[in-house]
Every structure is written in structure tokens, then in C-alpha cells.
Figure 1 (cartoon, rainbow, N blue to C red):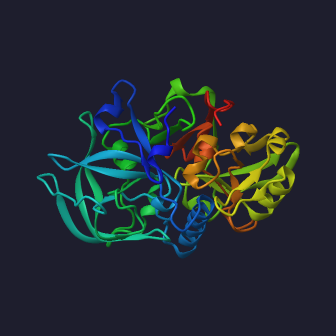
Figure 2 (figure 1 turned 135 degrees about the vertical axis):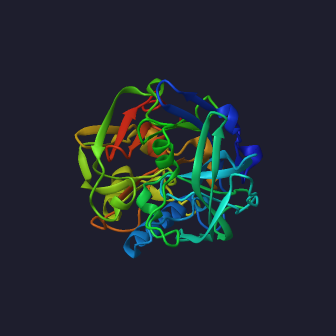
Figure 3 (figure 1 turned 180 degrees about the horizontal axis):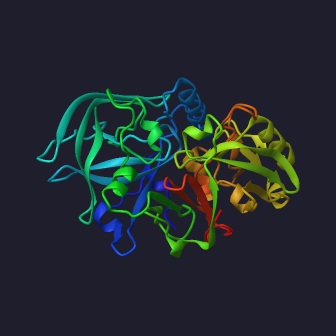
Length: 403
């Protein structure tokens, strides 16, 4: 097992773009491995960071900004090495399903080459706790020698705030409507996924995301599959539901779901989102209070999470998410933060923390839950632009006792 203790408070597991990519021309699918970065604690704990991100996403939708909080302000980030230009310069970019723009220049400067073209148009995105602004360039993005995106719109920042100093920008994997109004003179700009599809690199505009729990025996963090999903990583079928039409969740990868703790419904069917950029599972304030009372958890002032005793852990009941008509169950073990990472979030090494937290507003806000990383590490997720749906499937980690 990888030990994080020697590398706190900032941990970065690196991978190279070329070694991590596998391309299948026969299936029209491409797999890209990613790495995990755990951020410095800063002034906000992991729960406060996630809550700030969710509130900023709501505000962005209300203001028509279609934006989210800067990813580097959340607890856990996922990064890839991306080549831009020809010859390519490699940049370390955050993966974000909560925004659509791809941009560079926050750390390493953008290097124009023979494939680079400056459109002269201003580009800017507000992320709630941060922002970037600069000029739009059109350039080539290389994920591997076999996976090249031509004529991709890229923001080149002249000013950026709220992003870690060792990161260069963001690879936007959200819906195209999140780019609305970000580039002067354009309604929306094609995302990386849009161009992969339109240029024939992938046969369907589908993104599959597979997380491997950090407390598992492998040091690999996970993978993205462009053009479909990886059958080898799932157990059973993929269950699909249509994207929600409820504002504000409909601005992102939004669905409808209900949540039960044991036999008790704590959150009736409502709208929320699936988001790789959120660390925890956030639920509406009224639902969180019920969960808190039923589990007996007490708020921990350092981590911001609910803390339980060993006896309370033994009495935990399943937490059940009903998506469509299908139940997705978090076992007691899946409801706790990986104990091997307790100190990474400022907690006590031998404590037990729950990964469900308060979104900061009651049900009925239009974005009542966020299923973040701690949900997605137990279930494979599929983001299907072509069919306007989201799919979920079980993996070998769904019922594992990793934590």
C-alpha cells in the first residue's frame, strides 16, 4: 500500500501521458489513466471546500455563468499530463466534469508552435473562489501519439487565481453549455469530448470514469475512457437514467435520486449532480440532519466530518441511493473515510469519519446533492452526451472492505 505520510501535506502521484494511454481503433474507444493529488489543507477543511464548491455551482447557474469552484480548492484532485502544440509542451491539468473549458498557463507558460493560432478573442471563466482570464488560442492537444485532438479551443491565461502553484490549468470534461459566454463573440465552444467525437477519434460522445480507492492494494488512481466504458472494470450491467431537467442541476451532469438510510427515506427523489471534482457525498441540510441523528455522528471541528465510535460503526446501516429504479448501496465500510488517509485531511489516525456531509441548503434548491469521489470510487460512472444520460455500474470495489 502506498504510504502518504512521508509526503504530507501535499501529495502528488505522477503518471506520464504516453505510458498511460491505450487506443483501440477497432472499438473507437480510448483509455487514459489519471493520477491523484491531495491538496494542502489551507484555511478550509475538506467538508468546507466541498460545500463552497457546491454553493458556487448553484450561484453560477443562477447568474448564468455556468461555472464552478476552482478544483484546486477541493480536497482531492485528479490530474493528467497533456501535450499542447507541435512539438508538444507537456502540461499538468486538472480533470473537471464541472466545467467545460480547457486552459493552460497558470504554472508553466504556454508555448506557441507551428500548430498554434491566436484568435484574439478574450476568454474568462469564474469559478466562485477563483478565476482565469486571457486569450483564446486554437491548437493541437496530444494525449498520446495515437490520440490527437486538432483545432481545439484553449484558453491561455494572463491572470489566474485559486489554483495550486504546481498545476498548469484545467481539462474541462463537463457539458458544452458550461462554456456558454466564456469566449467573446461565441455562444459556446466545443469541448475536448466534442472534438474527439466530431473528428472521428471516438464513435460516440461518451466518457467513462473509473476510480480505484486510494486505500486499495494498487497505486493506480483510475482511468477515463473516451468513446464508451471499460467492460473489464465493471460487474454486471450499466444502468442509465436521463439527465435531469431541473435547474440548477441540469447545468451540470445532473440526475434525480432518492436516499435511504436502512429502511428510512432521508431524502425523497430530488435533483443533484455527479461530480468528479467533489471529494465527499453532499446531501441537503434536512437529509444530513436525519443521517447525523441516525448514525450518532458528532461534528469534528478539524476535518468538518462526522466522527463515530467503533460501536457506532458496528451499528451502521446501508446507505441506499435509488437512481431510476436501481439501488446503489454504500455499505458501512463505504460510508467512512479511508482510515489510511485520515492524517491527510488533518484527522486523527485511529478515528472513524463519515463521508456524508451537508451541502449547506435544504431540499428544493434545484441542486440538492452531489455524489462525489467517495461515491464514485464504489461505482463506475458513464457520461453520455449522445443519449443525454448518465450510467452507473458496480465494480469489484463496490462491496470491498478497503477502508
